[in-house]
Amino acid sequence: MIGAPALFLFLFFPLSVGGKVVDQVAALVEGEVITLSEVQQLVQYKGWQISDEPDERRNLYLTVLDQIINQKLISREAQHTPGIQISQDDVAHQLQAYRRRFSSQDEFQEQLESMEMTESTLRDLIRRELTVWKFVQTRFEPFIIVMPAQIQKYYDEILVPELAQTGAPFPALELVQEQIREILILEKTNQEMDRWVKNLRSKAQVSVLLFRATPSSPNLPQELLIEWELQPVTIAP
Image 1 (cartoon, rainbow, N blue to C red):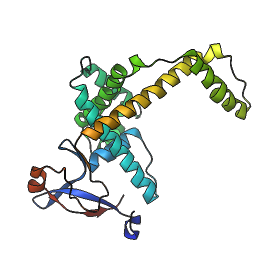
Image 2 (cartoon, one colour; image 1 turned 90 degrees about the horizontal axis):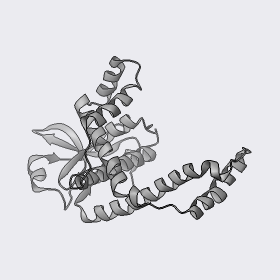
Image 3 (tube, rainbow, N blue to C red; image 1 turned 120 degrees about the vertical axis):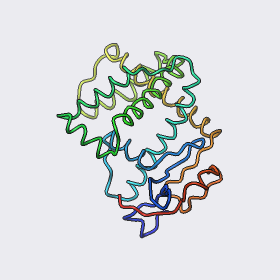
Image 4 (cartoon, rainbow, N blue to C red; image 1 turned 180 degrees about the vertical axis):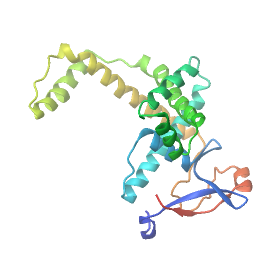
């Protein structure tokens, strides 16, 4: 529960080296630090809107942090999975697609500066997301089976009623069954991945420090306690 003073300010934990605040620790995953900057950078990269409502803003940051934690854990597993390799061309292609969102190179550079990222760190973020995507494709999708009865059920119970509400005509099942199959494969893949990640996290050393009242944690590595001074701090959104 956030107290009244925190309705306009958020509580984080800064990394302080020699008395100088470097960044805020958001979480630890198997001893690896995830900073607040990483959370904010992913929010900006995805173009997600940050609400003016403190609770909604808090929930967004926690949701994004949770996503990064899962990505870090999946990336670790991907290192030991055959066939999970992301080439420089894969990263370059995705980076180019991101560049096309901006009207000029200068605008792209301004976006990098606003995210406090270099092109190299952006490439790292893209590589991590591509690794997760390819892992999911390799680990889960090949084993997903969608039966004709499931396609029929989705058509009868979801697609047709939704179109009926809008007054739009609905196509014959034969015309949309492949699209429905893709939707169901995605749903089943996400369900399997969620179960797998939940099991993975139950075995991993994960400490979420974002919004905690105290930075103490049983999973904090000793070197973090020794080398970094962790203190509560309030910062404006």
